[in-house]
Image 1 (tube, rainbow, N blue to C red):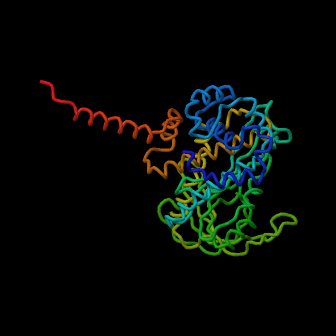
Image 2 (cartoon, helix red, strand yellow):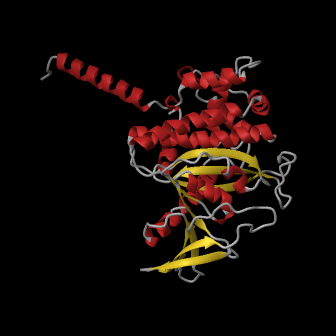
Image 3 (cartoon, rainbow, N blue to C red):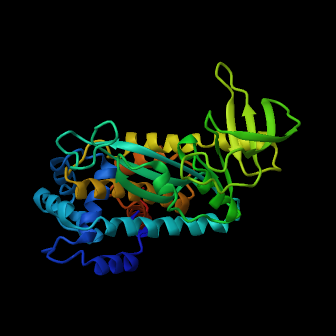
Length: 373
C-alpha cells in the first residue's frame, strides 16, 4: 500500500523542511509509517502502537522501518513540521486527480467542514470555538464521483467556513455544491466569473427580485429566475453579484420546501436538486473518517501532534482509495480497510508466489519418484 507514495517526492519535501534534522535514526519516513499504522490498525495510544508495530520485526526490513519507541514518536510528533504531511497529502491528491481527469467526466466538488473535538486537557491553547469548546476544524473539498479528497485544510474551531472556502482555486467547468454556511454573494460571483457552476441554498431573508417564472414538473414547486434586490445588503459591504441567478423550491415530505440557489439557468430543475442531494456524500465521508480512522482519540495532545494525526488520517484514507483504484477491487472502502487492518504486515503476492513455487517443487518431486505398487 505504501508503494503509492512517491518516495522521491516525499524525500524532497522532507529535505525542503529539514524534517530529518536531529532525527537520531528515526526519520520522517519512519514517523509516517508509524502514524499511518495508527490510522489503519485503530491503535488508540502510543502503547498500543508500540506493541502492535514492534510485534512484526521480521517485516521492518522490507518497509525500511525500525522498531518504534513511544517516547521517540511523541517527541517527533510534537516538534516536526506538519507541513511535511500536508504537502505529501497534496501529492496523493494530485495523483488521484490524474486518474479523475483521465475519465473525462464532469467534476463534481462537494465542500464542507466538520469540527473535531479534542480532550479538555489536550485542546491546544487558543483553539476554542465560538461556544468556548476546544476543537479544530477540518475543511474538505471532496470529488463526489471518485470519492477522492481534492483539498484539505485544518484551522482552529472558531474560523468561519467561508474564510477557508475563499482560498480555494476554482476550476472552470466544474460544479461546486455547498450548504447555506457558505452563503457569500461576492464569493458566488467569483465562482461564476471563472465559468464554474455552483449549487447552494438561499438564506431565509435573502432580498430577491423575481424576473420570470419557469414551468415546473415532479417535486419542483417553483422555478424562478431572480436577481439580488440590494447592492449593499450589509453596511459597508457591496454585493458585486449583478447577474441573474436561479431560485428553485424543492418539495420535501414532512418538512418545509428546500430553497436552492444556482447560477445554472438552463439545466432542468430536477438535475439541480439531484446535485444538491449528492452533498450528503461529504457528510457520510466525515462520518466514515470519524468512525473508522483515529481522529477521536489522539496519541499526542499538543497542537502539532493533533495536526499531524489529522493529516495522516487523510493520508491513510487516500492510500486506501488509491489501493482500491490500483487493484480494481469491488469491495467498499470499509471492507478493504477491514481486510488491511488484519493483514497489515502480510505480503499477499510474495506469499502466493512462495506457495506456487512450493507446489511446483512437490509436483516435480512426485513425477520423479518411481511408482510404488
